[in-house]
Each structure stands twice: as structure tokens, then as C-alpha cells.
Length: 171
View 1 (cartoon, rainbow, N blue to C red):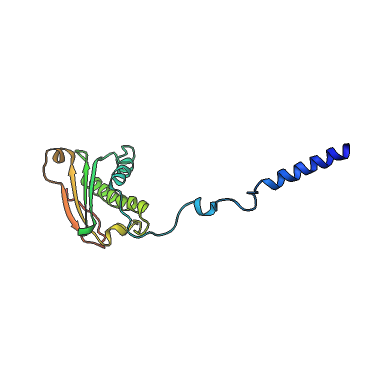
View 2: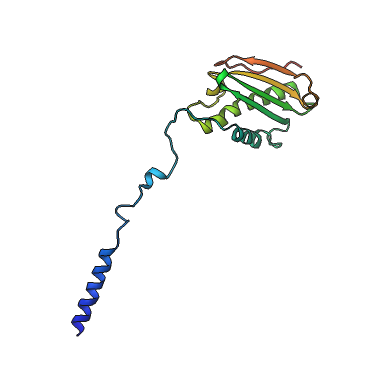
């Protein structure tokens, strides 16, 4: 009788082992395809301007990092080959600080675009970045009071596409 029990237990164990599918050797999904960053380049990516505005405001309106910052606005007109950039600084901000901040915002916008579309090159010390290789920059820098009153900008320029120039605002 003991032999029958042993044979029956071994048979049950063999039956149970044969009924399950092993996922150890061959997983059901190829996790290498679904996990990790996607470094593929895609064509025709539509930039999400709302997400760009949110990212720009989170980073470049931080009072600790940019105490002169008040408002950032921009419009991407890529079909017409230009980008509008409006930078508003607090009243009393020096011309040097306003120029520095305007350059930071221009480069920051490019780098936020790169987050969405890797085909654009990042900004660097002597380049505004890939967004501006095929687009002019229409820059306006305002003080807060002039901006709120609909007044004139303290600085306004058009930077031609694929051009880097130091922003210098006269006192």
C-alpha cells in the first residue's frame, strides 16, 4: 500500500509540474522592449506648448534661482520660422540682470523643447540651441509695470535664425 501512495504522490507531482508554463526561461513579454528609455528618433512630433509653459514656469520663475523673474511668455510659430519670447522682470531689475535672464529663458525654452523632441540640439555656452537653427527669435523684455500697463519693452530685438549673440540691454 505504501508503494501505491508513493507512486500516486510522484504521479500527482509530475502531473502538476507538467501543467504549468515556466516563465523563468521564456518570459511572456519581452521586457527589454517595454522597459527603460526610448532612444528612437521620431519624425513629425507635435510639441505640447501647454507642457512647455508649465515646465518653463516651474523652472524659470523660481524666486530662489531667479529673483528678478516675473512672467515668461512665448509662442512657437514654427510654420512661419520664428519664436516669440516675452520676458518680464521685476521693476528695478538692472539691465545686466534682465539681459542675463532673457538669455537664460531663451536657452531654457530650447532645452524644454528638447525634452519633447530629441531632434533639436541642446543649448550651450555659445548657442541658443537647435530650436533656433531654423527659427528667428523675436525677443521682448519688459519691466513689470510697463508690461502690466501695456507699455513699451525695455528691450526688443529679432535674432536671426542660426545666430548666437550676446544680449546687451542699454541702461
